[in-house]
Image 1 (tube, rainbow, N blue to C red):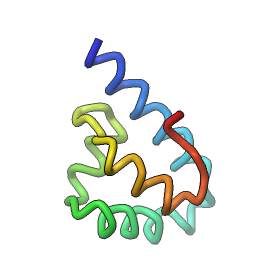
Image 2 (cartoon, helix red, strand yellow):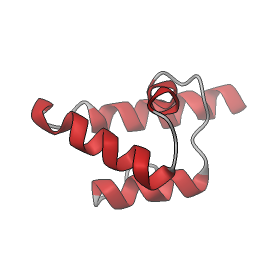
Image 3 (cartoon, rainbow, N blue to C red):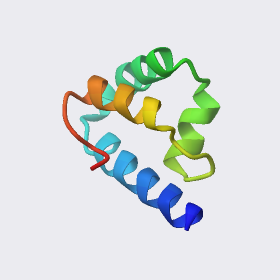
Length: 71
């Protein structure tokens, strides 16, 4: 069950992140990294479902996105 949830969260994050204009990728990625206090490696682990995204970090990502991603 945990594995499915992790994959679902990663799919939602990836769908939103890769729908951004390419020239915004770095700025948005760096903002998420700073707000969540993580490394770039963890960010990409989230996108590939190698690491679970905590509830607090989900909220921080949604604040950066200015929309609900993980409902």
